[in-house]
Length: 416
Image 1: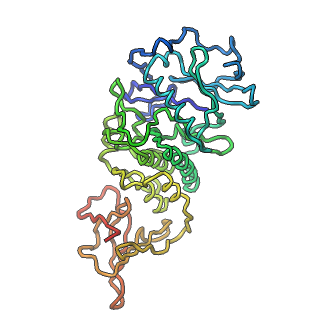
Image 2: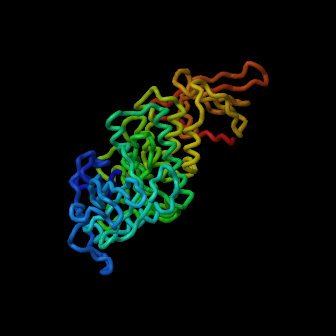
């Protein structure tokens, strides 16, 4: 089981950096600044100066035989333990004493317990026990032998499309289960996705989760954003209400990174990263990886819409889209409410990225017109008039060249 830490990176200044790991924003092996918040733990919860020592107390809570330390972090230590009651090996997470004296960290640990005890899904670790033992706040959950997706990406590089979509669909299922319980994760990123040795996928670290619909807690008392900026949705940066579609945005960034090997945005500071999420259009994944089929670009860019109403309206909708069978050729014409029909190739083998037919001529649609359809921009290359009096007009498009200026952009309305 991996540790997920909430500290401040001194190199770039964002919250929730991980102890001993590269900062997700600046990429440096961050020196982590201690929290500046004053201890606010109530006297009834005061901790002793003596830390838990398995060498002195090998059995925790008169039940869990400590086998080994799995990891240490800024918030908690995780041990592999043997449950003498069930006979299973499990993971025991203890809140560090100095962290427990910080009201914010204490609340985050308690929130993680509260959320995990409610959620039931194969891709979400179940809490099997929790409480206070002496002065130690703890919980016990299933153990995952494996590594996080961030390390998988470093080891293997970009994933095949099929593998990336299959993994993200499982995470989307887990998010849908959380959303059904009114919980928004708020920190979806590769470091919080575990890939087990048996191939199973697990979404972890619900310490930043909040009830859906609440206004986001934008900054901490130290003035830092809450979350991991490279993966945060626009609404997390500007204090708008956050709902399940925020997690869809973050998961879209994870999918982008799995396909290309890098996140869509990079920046040298938190504020620069925030402005990119808020204002800058993300590139299509195919810009970095031209062999990607057009439908992949459409899915990713729909996740990364700035306006939540333009994204997939739930994680389950994203999972369903990722699991659609792909023929490897040109899809059948899709009839639109406007009376037009559209065909979009699923591979790059076709000369055209989009072919749209209409019962009437489109006024002003001439070669070089830019068309935005389902989150992607295309350039009109060829117009074929009908061959018969009652025939249809056909408009053929290629992807809009990266960096080329648009003289005229048509926002296509499929309703008409």
